[in-house]
Length: 112
Length: 113
Image 1: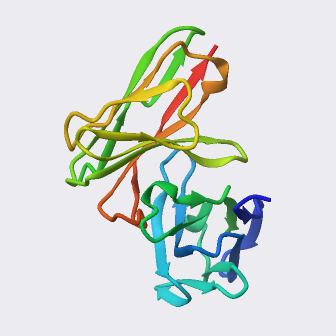
Image 2 (image 1 turned 60 degrees about the vertical axis):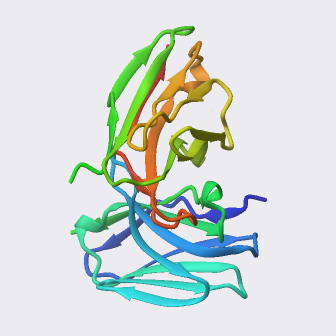
C-alpha cells in the first residue's frame, strides 16, 4: 500500500462546476498537508497548506483535512479553464523536512 | 523574482555520459532538494541539503551525486547515465524545517538514449 493515494484522473468538468480532489494516506504521523498545482511542463507551485485537521479557505479554493479518516480534500468553486492542471497532494510529519511525501497527482481539465 | 532557477531545460544524453544539472535559488533558503518525477510515480526525493556543506541521500540516490558549497547553489551530477535516468528533474528549496512550503524550479527534461 502506498503511503499516499491519489486518483490520477483525468477529471473533466464544465466551467463553473465545483471540483473535489482527494487523497488518502496511511501514516498517522503526518501533520502538514499541502496542495500543489502543476501546469504542463512547469514545476509544482504551492496552492494551499494546512496544519493538522480542519478547513482552510483561500478565494475559490478550500482545503479540508480529516485526520480521523486519513483523508484530505481540495475543493475548487466556480472552476475556470485556467484551473486546468495536475493537482498534487503532499504531506509531512513535524521535523520531517526530507520526507515530504507526494501523491501522484490528479489531472483536471475544465472545459469552457 | 527569480526564485529557483534550473539549467538546462532540456538535454539528451547518451548512455554512459555524465552531466550536471545546475540549480540556484535567491531566496536565502537553507533547505534544498532534488526530485525526479516519472509518469504515474509522483515526485521522488533524490538528495537534499540542510545548508552549505551538508547533504544527504533521499529515496532514490543511486547514480547521482550532489554538492552544496554555497547557500544559493545545489548542482546534481549524473554519472554514467542510464536509460532509467530518463525523467524530469526538479530542484526545490524551502525555508521551513517541516518542508511545508517548498518552492520548485521549472524542471529539467532529461532523455538518456
